[in-house]
Length: 467
Picture 1 (cartoon, helix red, strand yellow):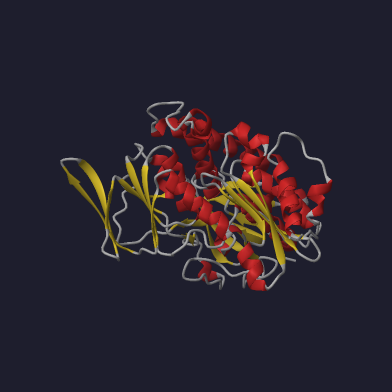
Picture 2 (cartoon, rainbow, N blue to C red):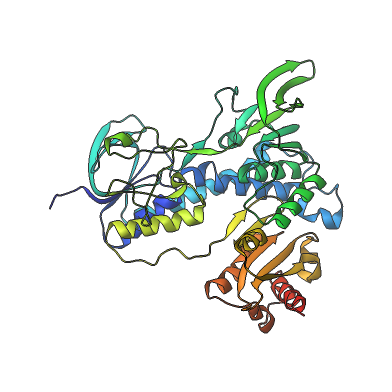
């Protein structure tokens, strides 16, 4: 049997890469991991999930947005909020998270390389140190690719990172925009559009599709649209972008966006949030016979193995659902399969968290999906204003809805929009995992006052609808 430097080598230190490396290390395997920048954590920690959620929390706190329902629309914690104010919390959280990840690798005996990795053959990797100290080769029995994605950039748009930028550039912005156009209303576009709107920025959201977030229950998505408009966000749905350019006049610097319909939008800054592509450049995948699709995504089997037997891929680079939570589980499953270790497969139902303002979280089937599948279902709803905790928090617009089977009463889906949605959804997820019925919420006691009481109210509402 061939002798390798590592039993498992991971490329990329984001959520999927971390979980793969540590799962194999805990099984007693010799593990190495390469990260092509000088800090660990990948997009999730450095430019994506963690920064955007920290940025959001800073915006909510400093703007006083959560308290405005109680103290009035003019309430704010700080009158003139700067990018430095917003990034202070973000930088602190990123540094702490990087330290935690490094500690996990060290504690589990994972060798960490700050190097760009590429394949020489399926078992041999070339590591080019990011600090320019040299190149080395390592061999590995099994390899896991967890390289994530990069922001898509239209070559016809003059990106400069300040006036016209992507979500990866937000942490380097020097000033808060007076007005902002967001091109692309996917999850990232919607999140940043609502965050900047909460800060008082005039936001225009442009989307080629006629609806926002078409994978989300329509009632939830429609409520988000209503809340956006309440915060003075202008929505241009069903509008394609024909051109973007910069110009200056005596009033200052501007960005001009020309739409296919003939409309022209003039704004201070523009955020381009139209998709992401797999970060496979530089891996030399041609040397191992693995071919990405046009968007850099890799095809895998049920074990997350690519067309090359000893090479696996996990996380955003394999496409949907592109969540940090699912990437972690994919990393765990791939690593265990690679080292022939038995492991439990990913749960059937996993939640989505969309950190717009207000927050959205869902698990299971939407009304549209149940209708299309011909499933006989009923709905139960509860508004946050119906529970005391909702009033204490100052959220009178949030609500929770449950979908359940008319005949078996099994819980089929949970949809929430409002404060704490991404935490609250896990109660429904646990019930669904055990094929529980809506009756569970009626028969059990919830702490008072809590938002969790919405489950009981929604359950009663749904059962009452059955007559």
